[in-house]
Amino acid sequence: MAKKCEMKLLGSGGSPFVTRVKFVLKLKSIDYEYIKEDLANKSELLLTSNPGLQKVPVLFHENEPISESLVIVEYLDEILPNVHPILPLNPLDRAHNRCLAYYIDTVYCPWLKKFMLTRDSEKKEDMKRLIIGGSAMLEEAFVKLSKGGTFFGGDEIGYLDVVLGCYLGWFKFYGIVFGFNVIDEARNPRLAQWGKSMWSHEAIMSVIPSDEIYMNFFKMLPGFLPPRHVHA
Image (tube, rainbow, N blue to C red; front, side, top):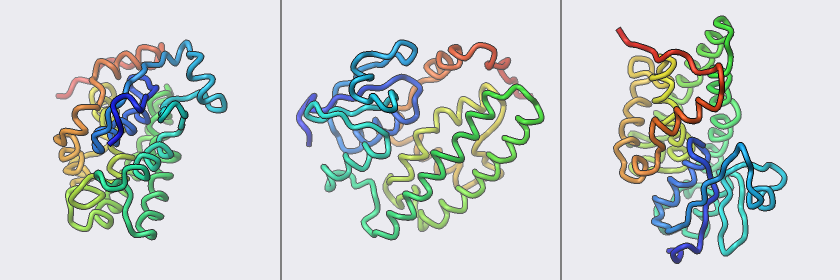
């Protein structure tokens, strides 16, 4: 186990990518110092530690910066492979996991952002259809990869649970703000049950940001926050 404050994490509230790293730090029982970043007024620390992307998260281990959440997750798994392993041991399983993770981060979740930002009702419905189709595909992937277990990783939280699970707070907030269930119990029963299992896991529930943090993020996007959806 890493010594206390041997690691530092530079992040911001509401970022699913920061939450992703926090998941793994918690699962592996790694002590770390959290440094809050103001993305509206980027610090010198961020600009010098991640000059190319200028994004969070940035993990500092022995004062060496590491950026990109998936890179950080794999790094943590490599330096502590015997404490709650994250990636599958089988090389083919690892390849399948990484491929689906790439889809989640570069295709599926960008649809969510576009859905949030568009004001055109027709385009919003188009994005909703894409998201529903993507959730159906993830449901099929879960059934295959979980092999009857509770999580994508089987009986224990694994790589894809961390990759997709970091968006759970946003999924919940979409239901509150837009009245749209990204993962729906009727359409995606297995994925919905997975979500409940993730929410109840101590390591996850302790690091997912509060609704207030997500609301503060929305308030930084003037004109994009719709009226609170009221369910009949």
